[in-house]
Image 1 (tube, rainbow, N blue to C red):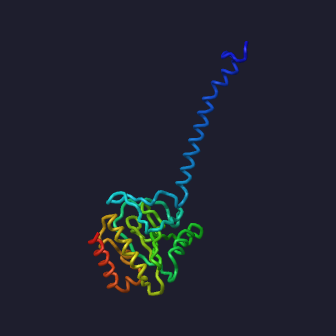
Image 2: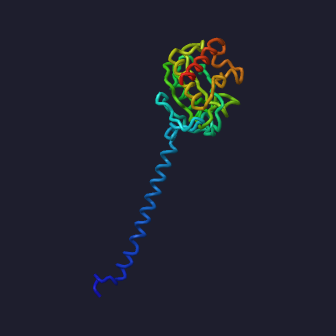
Image 3: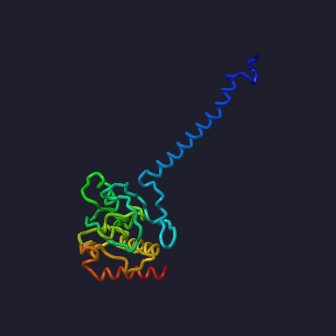
Length: 226
């Protein structure tokens, strides 16, 4: 019998196995792609968090907000869903002269030091730079009993008075206005840490009630123009 015959048993066996081998290669290749995509999505800071669902619809985080998310951990980003947003809480860092980046690093390092549980959704630097640390769809550890339904903003300040620089103030107004529009809030739902626990935070806005009222008025004026 000629080896070129289509009836050769070994040749027929080889031809039957080839499709199976190709299927296995395809399956393994597809699995590798899926696992690769999953790995990318699970890398801290690589989530699709520049879009957020709000009562106003699905919105994109503004380009003027830098996103540098803290990795998920029990001490500063537990990953607990923030199911509702009923307010925005303003804080001050309490450590004069530090930058937004330094405070973000402090929050992230709590995963190692276990010193306390603390974080905020946003940090605003003395230079006005805004850094997002926690996704808007998750709680942060900043506002005590109101962690479950508020977005927290920590503001840096140049000295012990706690007064914000002009750049910090302008960025705070801009960010709070955007959040109010996104979540359909008004200025009565913008509060201080002080209003929750009595802690003097943000210090300047607690010791100068007129400055706090002027800030809320700036928010109202901005919302009227939007």
